[in-house]
Figure 1 (cartoon, rainbow, N blue to C red):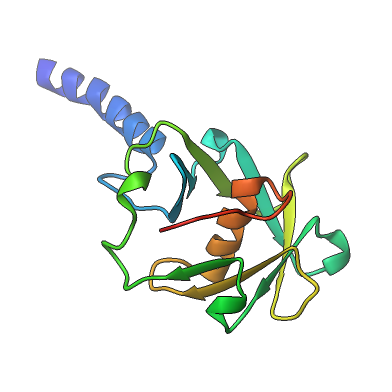
Figure 2: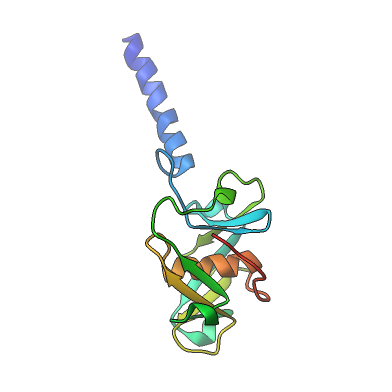
Length: 155
């Protein structure tokens, strides 16, 4: 009976730890390095300092991001071969800015209009097995808060 009570008290703690961590084990989230800091997407809404949302209506957007087919024309390019290509500087960086993608616009958060046509505040090129176009757009907007152009980013 004592074992059952111990098990009954440990299970909720284990469940809380899994919920707080997001998932069991090491989960890689899209991340970019910016100098000595980094910007990483998180699925834990409450841990993010920056929240972005997407819209299909350009009139509601605060930031316009154009997807381009030419890496040379892009402000931000993501090209990788899949798992394992993530930058070492994104691992355990204390200056990581966490960005979440919200289902609806959040007060003070950026609203992104993602399209293949201009005009645009940012242009992105994405050829990746781990990054979607939406994730790349969220990272570049989260890196600068939607203001100004991104100076230099690397994977």
